[in-house]
Image 1 (spheres, rainbow, N blue to C red):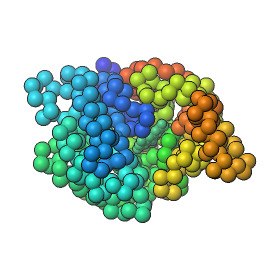
Image 2 (tube, rainbow, N blue to C red):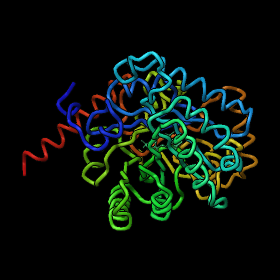
Image 3 (cartoon, protein in one colour):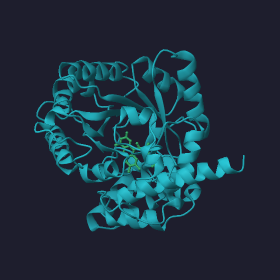
Length: 370
Ligand SMILES: Cc1cc2nc3c(=O)[nH]c(=O)nc-3n(C[C@H](O)[C@H](O)[C@H](O)COP(=O)(O)O)c2cc1C
């Protein structure tokens, strides 16, 4: 274990067994799974899995969540798990993410999902993307999680990912332990109106310090971080952890299809090879995301066609036809603007260790010249 791994900061107290600086693998629908998350944990990071978007009783995503959590426990290293016989009584050192825009999140999270989580006791529960037209959702979900957790003496850290100051302030008011400041560099879904992490992270930090001095709230940075330089920069901005998504997509443990891995590894210059747009969802026939959110993906043919004026109906039908034929040239690959830094695909544990070690080196080199 590196010297950094033995140092303790607030994150190491909150997440025992993790090393400083804390590296977090983002919850990513269709990509993350218990293997990936537990490998990140094995390397002293914090790995997230992603729950489904349907919270109604009897939904298949609830059964999947139960399976994923059971599998995660069986994969975790003993020292981070427990050596006592009733393992279910001990927290699971991974996190679980949920996307909240669905109309069934507020009415059902507390009676369907929170009890499953309470049985497995993950270390952190991450929320993202409530629908601004259902302003009660985030509050209801956090309150029901906390009240269910209290019945089993479990204290999950509540993590809320945001892209604006208003959303960050709301998360703080509602009792988030961690605010993930997600910049426009991020891969996948994000706030349409947003900023890069260089300004967003310190502004969120200042807000937390000035407006919530009595609350213990950590800020994490997400978006565009793919190596130790990015982690060092995130720490300099005031973040207590660096979240990476795109970097882990190519790890052998991820569920990403081969064509996505190849496309990510081949891409360079995230400025021109990725783009933030609604088109990525719309060509796939997905109109469910509230308009507050768009997404960043590799530029693809459907995007060019949309830019050239093709109607979304025509574009969607071509996309569907291409998918049926197995033509991947039109498929959407979510990607952050850091894609040009993603040049190799080592296992998730190696990514975690290497990025952490690089960050320590970068910080050491900066100190040396001061
Ligand atoms: C393929 C992919 C899927 C994602 N899915 C989710 C998700 O289901 N829930 C969520 O909260 N964030 C999701 N995100 C966003 C991440 O939480 C995170 O903000 C982002 O990956 C950080 O930027 P990076 O990709 O540049 O590292 C996703 C990102 C990617 C790349």
